[in-house]
Amino acid sequence: MERSLNIIYFAWVRERLGLDQERVALGDGIETISDVLTMLADRGAGYAEIFSDIGKLRFALDQDYGVPGTAIESAQELAIFPPVTGG
Amino acid sequence: MITIQVGEADFDIGAETLAVAGQGGGAIASFVGQVRDDGNLASLELEHYPAMTKKALRKIAEAALSEWPLHAVTIIHRVGKLAVGENIVLVVTGSDHREAAIESCSFIMDRLKTVAPFWKKETRTDGAVKWIEERASDVEASEKWQK
Image (cartoon, rainbow over all chains, first blue to last red; front, side, top):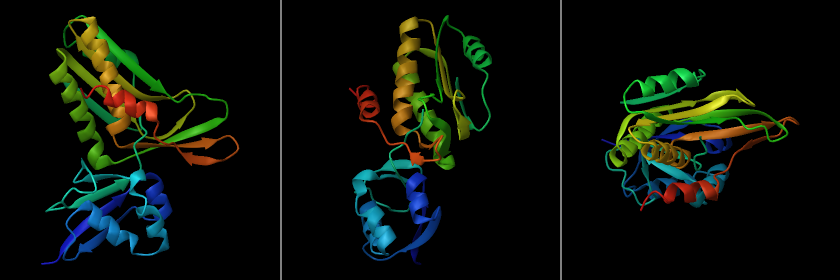
């Protein structure tokens, strides 16, 4: 069975992509958050611009913070967003 | 006792403070964050990650409870469109002693600002719209607790 992941975007990431979420298939060799970002950056100009500078992004895997090296394993949802600014 | 609320509705500072006081102890500390009028701000819009927000706030409250002897922690954070002067966030902590209440309240706010998944977008009176960026001083304030 093909693995897939729901990717959810917030704040300016969501606005610049014009998309709040999407489901992506995870091919062979896509094991970490970093692998997913590389795959997304290959999708075209809009994506490349956002996902090439990952220092500006934060990540949560199934609602817990992760880093680029975090393994996807059986996670269902990857959230990609800018540093938080609440309070 | 931990109370976490996230929503568009305003909160009653007095009622929430009394609720924490009612859990025991005689030292109650609170912090209220409001939309600051810095000259030409028209409004602020707060976005959040609904599936993660309460979980993240609860984790912060639990960390405070494990670090200080507290009877109660309340964290309320608003989302949606807010005008200048409106309430954004309320933290109330209750303990037997002043230091524990004040320090834990400060800890919760410092962690909330760098960990809870909220994003602020400001609209200026001239119509300019901008997502607020993370502040290095907030990151430093949050990291100082991780010793």
